[in-house]
Image (cartoon, rainbow, N blue to C red):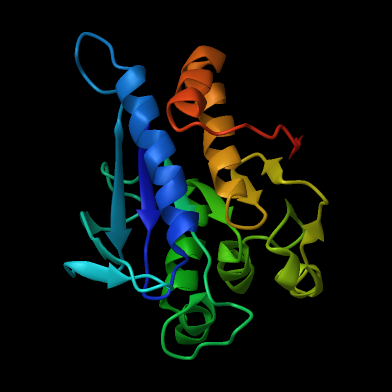
Length: 208
């Protein structure tokens, strides 16, 4: 399973880094014959070396998000949120929604069949792309009404599985989403092992 976490300036650290760590452990634990069971990496829309997150953490970038039709396209694209409600015009999910490049990229991947998972207000970037229209989804509590007004069917759950669209509520729920995906892909033993090593008490509030 190949996972790309799409970063932009102002993303919330835990929204992106939490799932990244879960997938990194899982792909190692699920290794066969010494080969990891896939990749997880941080990507951006344009080539750059680092991204500055909402609390000032500078994160190195592994590459550029591939074309959705390319052989290198991810099996799962993770979209973190950050700064939506603050309406930060320079660095935030809100700023990216106004620019339009990220929503267009997300719409393209969705149309090509890429499975997409949003964390926190990452859902609002998917809403801007039209991906959540008529779909079951959730976001951070501060943006729930906006998500509903956008045309999504808001579900009161920590994680929502709507087939090729997964979404998680606020911040730490992204870890639950990642562990849920790991369990589906690699089994409960791998998911439990990851939860144990990161000392995380799983919450199983998943609406399927």
